Amino acid sequence: AKRFFGMTSHSTELAAHRLDRLVSSLNQSHRLEDLISNPLMLTLTLFLGRENDLPSSRWRLLGRGVDVLVEHWELGKHLSYNARSTDLMVGCKMQLLRAIATALHGNSINGDTTRRAHIARGDLITLVRTVLCSELQISNQDSAIYAKEIVDILQQRGGVIRAIAPDAYGFSHELFRDYFVALELMETPHDEGQEAFLLSVFRLHWDDYRWREVLRLLCGMSALGTAIKLVDALVFGV
Image (cartoon, rainbow, N blue to C red; front, side):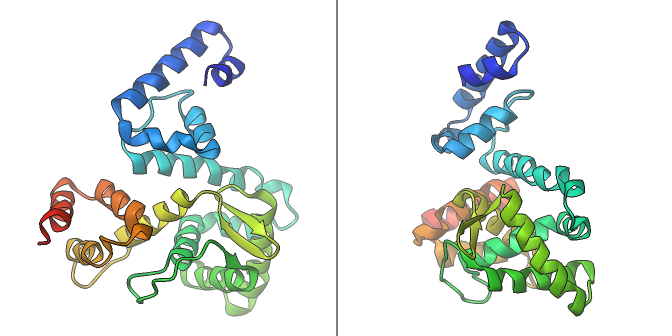
């Protein structure tokens, strides 16, 4: 951190100030400490800590990190021959990432409990087409063309999603996948109401280690009253 701020600050005083502020933020929120054990998350944390205090909550820090990585898509959109596809990708970026995360993690709504580390290119193209048609009302014929180009862009630019093997794609860090799964669960309307739905998710997955981070993020994203009920459901089985 000291070397990073020394290289990215125009004075030693500013570098020292940024380092002190970062250390203070981490000391005030132990929930963030384990995030910086990973090189990618450490780099993002240092980047975010250059100008502002770090968010005190885990999910807000992940959200800001995602914003930084996704911004890379937008900055490069005028450099690509397929600018229209990039415009479409940026226009539905959050919905696209939520859909990919849900497909990889498995979805409690449809009963799929299989969690995968990657998604095949063909499956990803189909998923992108679905998002383009549902979110941006792109015709089925046009979505077939744009979806292939969008997957090519993801492979070229990386960031949140990257190619992890030939014709296979995944999140650059599993925390990003879990973040978008939690976001999908929080923002999708449910007939029984959000709080009742979240309680059902906690009761169903409380002992599944694959859901540990998602449940943790859901607590942070929820209103205080709902978060208390979610924790009570875990502790007291109510």
